Figure 1 (cartoon, rainbow, N blue to C red):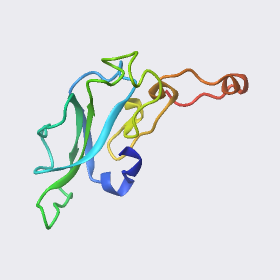
Figure 2 (figure 1 turned 120 degrees about the horizontal axis):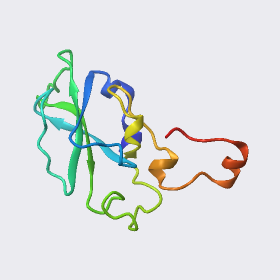
Figure 3 (figure 1 turned 90 degrees about the vertical axis):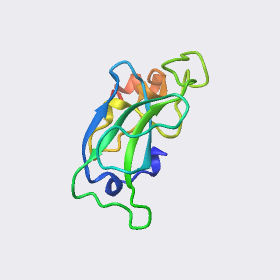
Figure 4 (figure 1 turned 180 degrees about the horizontal axis):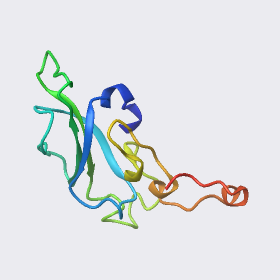
Length: 133
């Protein structure tokens, strides 16, 4: 889950690669996957689709026990809001979801009003408070 990803776990990222335009996506799911390489498009074995992944620099060390590297992968499931706007996540978002506009290499990203699928509350509007979009 994205909330469990720590900054030190992604400190060797050099770049995020997007496989599709994330401008229209309210959120993407992110996870740390064990992968055989630092770079290149990783294999994908989940339902749905991979929308992006992180590349690691040469200083990233492989696990001594498995020889794999922990890299972020960004993905969506068939029932996510982009393909089923009135479905399970018409409002709210999965625990591992973040707004893709808040993501960068070495930055884990966060949820926003946009990723949660709802307008700001009346209280927030009255106070002039907006969350990053």
